[in-house]
Image (cartoon, rainbow, N blue to C red):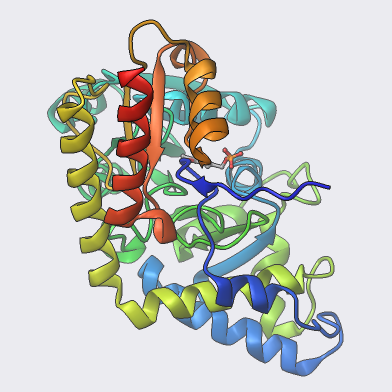
Length: 365
Ligand SMILES: *Cc1c(COP(=O)(O)O)cnc(C)c1O
């Protein structure tokens, strides 16, 4: 049987509070037929919209973890030949190009230094040269390095050029302030297993009125069923979901949202910033080197693997000797970056102390 019992300090999934796990196990009813389920769903939209900074009618919950949100945004907005701007300083950012191309879009990539947040002045200069794009994609926290981008001025700039904005905030929202309407974010993407601290299984997204218009005004139909956002526009009003909702996931997620709102969004964000700063200091005190120069996310800390270890060996040793799981990274970073996730329920000073003590123990041996 699979029965993990480690302290999970990964860059998602996170630790999950017991009240969330308990809710996930209650009887779930019939989400297709039961009117009370639609009422529950609508109330959940209203609560979650407070964290996304939009009205409840713009909120959607999809079955499937974060990637289905990225895929759905690209499937629903892209038509063959559309020019799409990929603004990136990391792997999730550059990965958007692959999704857009799947749906026939023509991508232009603005690549930025991966050790710093996106340089707004440089972006301005590039947009002066070319701004003829239907939409642009950008990542809030690009998790493989933990770089945090300043979404508000980036999206405001893009909107001023008439470009729709798609923001992957899966690894940031909740740990950092977010406001889709104020920042000018047309599609914002979140996942249940990051700061929200529910089990993996849901994508949470907001879709602006401008994005709905773009979807409605398509000349061609969306070449996907599962990733077709248009089915979701009026599903609560019409009491008809395109497929049976993952009721248990949503009931658990509802508790996770209550936990955040009870603590207060501002307090949750402040806790993440405090823990992240503490973690960076402690990692450096151990003599380890941070990957980033600037633009540190409040949700994850990336650092170079200690000398004489491979990333895999180090992660294994922490798990087996100390019952703590941390993350490695992906692609080009997988050989040398280790990451401590401090998201949601994992963002606690005492947990950071435990990880640091364990790393110290391994380094001393
Ligand atoms: C976690 C995450 C996703 C979702 O993808 P996973 O398959 O869960 O890794 C998408 N975007 C970002 C930035 C993430 O951190």
